[in-house]
Figure (cartoon, rainbow, N blue to C red):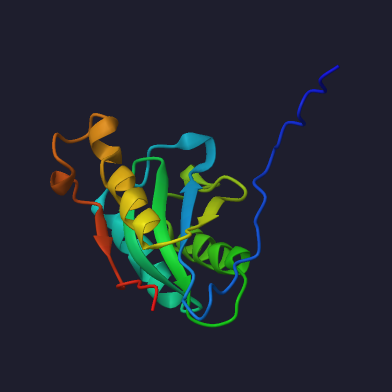
Length: 156
């Protein structure tokens, strides 16, 4: 008899590990509470960028801010757990959020995947940058104004 798999209510966060002297790159997705469509605007995008600059333990590479979630690639700058870093910048944004009626801003937790190689970074980025197109927000990924790259993340 086949047993049903347990339903996972929260993502499992594996420890980020060094890949033979190369900086690890982690793909992170963070969603808004109740999937509120509140992020795809200039004020929210600017606030997220400020939070990532203030949260110096990890560097943000490429990112896409969607109306109800954020995709980003990051790499540790110092020895700090990913969970603590995400908690820091989510709290930073929440404290400075313009409309207090929209709180809570974030779902509990986040989703993360450590990339295995340069090819997966390029492939995952292609998927992420087309997210606004798949959601019918723009016709070309270059037209989406809420994306960018704060730091060049490399494997060396």
